[in-house]
Image 1 (tube, rainbow, N blue to C red):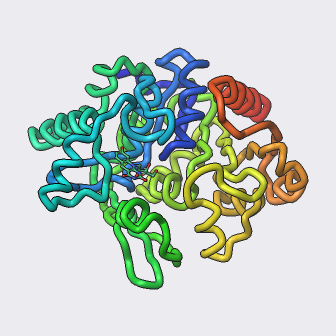
Image 2 (cartoon, protein in one colour; image 1 turned 90 degrees about the horizontal axis):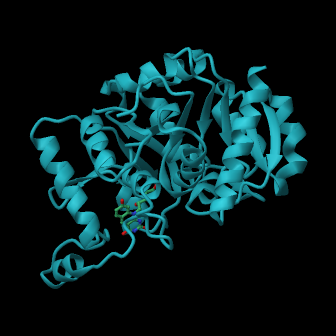
Image 3 (tube, rainbow, N blue to C red; image 1 turned 45 degrees about the horizontal axis):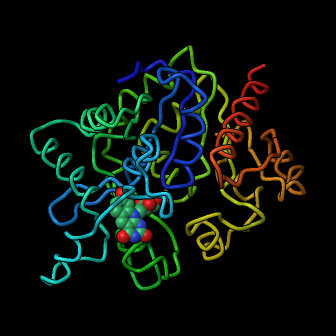
Length: 319
Ligand code: FO1
């Protein structure tokens, strides 16, 4: 694993975060970059420990992610899932044959006493991924989604119910007992640190679980480097996923100032999409500096350009 003294630390979860992660990984030497990854989406399913956000980042950085879905492996086949369905098994969560091999390997290694950090590092090494992929904690934290119809485990809400139930809040089960990953704390305390990036991931269910781990928000606030977030909204809508729908249901305005207010004092800078330029002054009035650029990441060039813009913006905030 790369050293825990990176120049850039990026917090991420989900497909949007992994896209920027790829841009950063292509722009920085592996030892200069570490990711802090949400594990609130993790769950135990069919006897396996599934870590979707770690895997989405791992596959993306390895060039192995399915280009259409953004999650799971490319060139996938589905014989296992088809057979599971035919046997009357629980098949609402799509596990491809190639992906399955990773879940089995991880579950076995965890059962043998390895930590999630160790298992992830071993998998990353096998897939040729250089930057450190650090789970926010080695202890289980599980995002629970409160809805009018009751509380749902995150993947039940997200995949089984297709994000249909209106959300009323979130709970990060186990967060109060979880220990922050020591490698994350070391990375954030590094005097070499130049930028902390909050990727354009869902603030409620990708970034907030990380901030809920005791000590992590404080470590981000006291780190020497500026904290720069990329707004997950483009023109008041989320590029992918339920961020905008959640904001609507939680009666939070679908605007960049609302994103800035959500992160509060943590934030030194916010990157806005050009379509949201009109909101820049309102964000600045709340405290953070603002830069405006194209945040939509359709091509590899978009990912690289956004990575460049984020790193250049962080540089200006250090000066
Ligand atoms: N997302 C879906 O919408 N449907 C699925 O069946 C599904 C399966 C799946 C399997 C492995 C994996 O790593 C991710 C998977 N995802 C699936 C994505 C995952 O639910 C989400 O990306 C995150 O949890 C939200 O960030």
